[in-house]
Length: 239
Image 1 (spheres, rainbow, N blue to C red):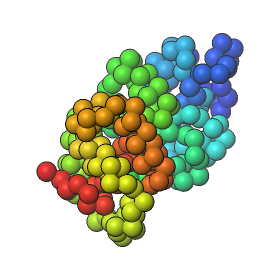
Image 2: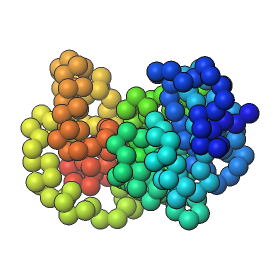
Image 3: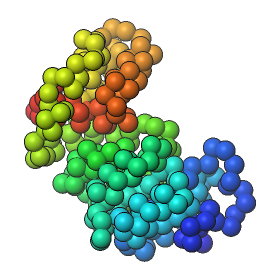
Image 4: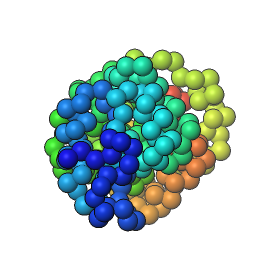
């Protein structure tokens, strides 16, 4: 049975404790919503607390339900997933958005990442991939493997709108140290923390510290946003 469609946390009493990831599913297709709800509610650490049939309702239900993760379809009526993501990220500092897409190189995925999404997931993902994706995003990480980050960002930075002046300006990343800037460039090239550490001949924990400082200084949510930033600031160019 699908839980959360009435705006409550469902009737089961074994999923209300700490550590349970609260999920909102936003998709205009009922079968998608119900299918994902069944798969996620089968997980002991995940609970679907609500559903939305369009972007406008998704924004409203995030305010009402305060989910940890929003599974967001890109193409929806009234308000598309990109604009809904932008509104949710701007208004809520805790809800993470995981974009749902039919194709792994959807032309709107890059725009969704710019809007603040923490990653993307294909709609035909397995139950394991879906649950793991929710867990990764809930933990504050980006759901983009290094190889996917590299392919996605390079592909869509070619067709994205011109960089925003505030981002393209040198001053936008002027607070970064030389080493932090170097790490940012390597993030944008799709390297993992371990690969960056190996290349710079430092401990992986040192890279994690650099990444954290980069995100704080630039006001970014995760390393995916950092990769987008680097391309928009022309620190890295496609290809």
